[in-house]
Image (tube, rainbow, N blue to C red; front, side, top):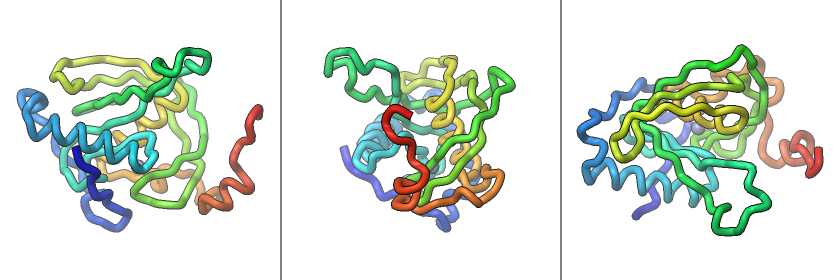
Amino acid sequence: MSILKVSRMGHPVLRKKVRPVPPAEITSGPIQRLIDDMAQTMLEYNGAGLAAPQVHEELRLFVAQVVGDHEDEEDEARKPEILALINPEIKPASRHVEEDWEGCLSIPDLRGLVPRHRDISVKAYDRTGRPIELQASGFMARVIQHETDHLDGVLFLDRMKSLESLSFIEEFARYHAKRDGE
Ligand SMILES: [Zn+2]
């Protein structure tokens, strides 16, 4: 596996609507290798998710770390599980929209408040080429919406209602980050 170069804001690949992966190609060597490399790249840079255009690949797929409420489970169960979604299609599953902080490996060192649907349902293919449908809420739903936006050339800055909250990481940590227990 390799760590891939991450594209940064300004690179045209981040502004393209990219093409679907033909389902028959999902289990091919090149796509499987791309998914493994993207997963490794995401973990290396501590991302919650990573979309193919962020590694200069014009394909509709992303990887994300699945987060659960497993704090009291054994260490083994707490290892990050990595989800790969191919050709995802999102539908809101409730009318709730929530604002929360987001960052992006392609927009280093910035954080901003972004409104997202709280609950979504997603249709996609998994990495074995199987069509799947899943429900997500809260942080996971936010990550899936952020990553799916990348496949349409949309960045989180485009989704912000106002740029007033836009902060550098250091200032974010100092003035805006939630403290433990809050
Ligand atoms: Zn991003």
